Image (cartoon, rainbow, N blue to C red):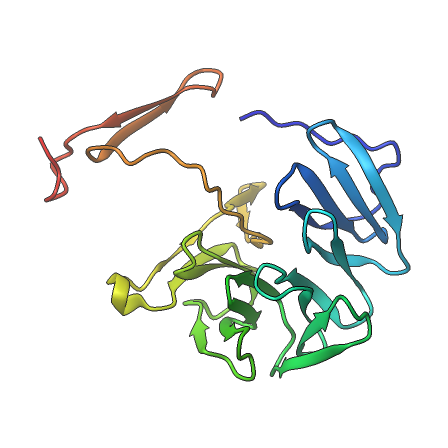
Length: 260
C-alpha cells in the first residue's frame, strides 16, 4: 500500500485530534491541539487554508463542500457532527458537559438541548436519521426526528470505556473501539439478521518482550472491497513487494456449504 506524508510549510505544532475528507472532493480538514484548523488539498498536495483559533480543536466536520465546522476545547464540546443531509443547517455536538446539543448554524446563538446524559460523551456518529452516542461502555441511539429520548441503549459487549463509535456501511449496526484495543460489532436489530455481532482485539503491541494495551482511537470503513469468492478463501500470499495478493478460493473440507 502506497503511503505519503502531507507536507506543510508551517508544520502542525501539536497533536492532531481529527481528520475528515470533504463529501465530494479530496479536500482534507485537519483539527489539532495547536489551535489551528487546516484545509489541505490532497490531490494537488497543497495547503489551501490555515485558520487560527483561540482554543485547542478537538473535532471538525464538513457541513457541505463549502462549509466546515470545528469544536474548540472550552471545557464542554469534544465531538461535533453535521446532519445537513437530513436537516438543513443542523449540527449536533456532545461533550464533557454531559449534554447533546443541536445547533442551527444559520443562527450562531440559537441551540437546544437534545438530552442530558449520566456521563461525558466519548464519541458520536450519524447515519441517516440515527444519532449514535457513546457514553462509558454503552451506546445510545437517537432518532433525530424525535430526539427527546433514546430509541435504543446497547451495551458494547465490553465493560471498559469506549473511545469511538461508527455506523456500519449498511447502517444496520455500529462498531466501537475501546481503550484496551478491542473492537465490537453490534446490530440494532439482531433478531432480523440472525446474529448478535462479535468482538475482537487488534493493535497488539510488544516492547522488551512485554505486551501492552493500545487504544482504538478511531474506525473508518472503506466502501471498496474485494468481491466475494465462489468458495472458501483457503490461502493468501503477498508478493515480495507487497503489491500483489494471491487469493486461493477452494474447497477446504470444513464448511458444509462449500462446493468441491
